Length: 437
Ligand SMILES: *Cc1c(COP(=O)(O)O)cnc(C)c1O
Image 1 (tube, rainbow, N blue to C red):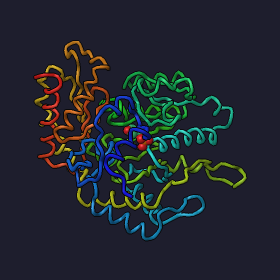
Image 2: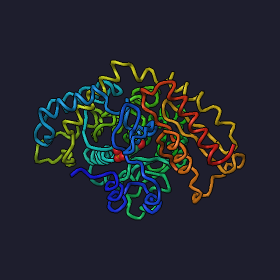
Image 3: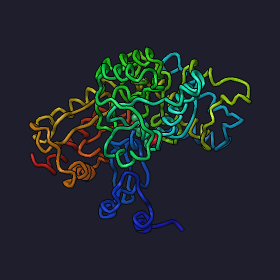
Image 4: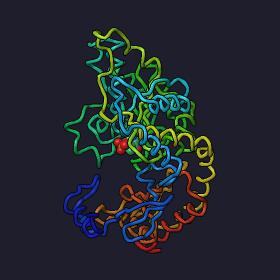
């Protein structure tokens, strides 16, 4: 028997533990039950439509039920749904590895698949450590550590959280996290100073190029990446770039590091890779990182790491269709013009007394709400201002998920100019409803 909408709502609050969610608050709020979707719109169990301004939490590039991706997944389903990459391969994984190398910064030649952004980061950290071990020996590796940036977000597994720096997400777990080094700002001089001080102990420097998304869409100053890349080379650390949020066109380039022409040693991608369809992630590596892992079997130089669903064929098929759409429709090239439309649509918000920074890079937007703009003072968290503005947007047909009091707009790359203008107007109206004119 098919569950009724009432069954679903009851079972949801009785059993389902939602991520990043205060369940007591959630249970007291009218849930959004997504029954299906059409293009850029989610349709709830009562038939109401909502523009998905979260892009399914930042991974959906072209809207939902994209005919080309649907078809690619269906075709793959007719061949095989899942088969392992441990000791075997399949056409979709091999072709996807090839296509990723083609679009990635030149020099990244090897693709290690996993499932999510966090797992792509875990693989990168462990690769960087083992690379250190293989190239410099055990005594050196025992001292090895990582350098990360304040406000970074790299995912929620323990390794990824250890290099994270969003206090609200990560401080709770600090006692059980690997100890890492952190620089407090996007100050390349500080990165250089720490690397020099540590005298080669740092085996990897990890950062989000372009935008620190989960920190509230904070823009990374231009030139920072170039300088850090130079410092990492000078001090023998690997440069690990996390493009889980920024990859696949979001910033107006395929990858944000390409704005500065920087090739990292390791590149983590996930979210947009399958067009928001299925969990496939990848850690791309330079050939120089890969070769030390080669040797006789019994030398045990190989990378002892992997996940059951790594390189899942259905996900790889979705990713191949995604890369084809990006290429054929020139959607990455279209991002700067769309970004300009969104910038204009958000401009009227700047006059609102409770609006602080309006952050926008490509199609990654964040509008900061403040109790006192002049004093740069935040609202008390118990006022739930961002949450309430989000609910007011939902009443107006837009689904958005703020980061605290930063109103996030991450529309699909295919969002039309009219829809971008609508997003600006709806956010403005919601801010006025909750905070006054
Ligand atoms: C979302 C995100 C991650 C984690 O990805 P998951 O798929 O949620 O594990 C890692 N890094 C960045 C920059 C992200 O935005």
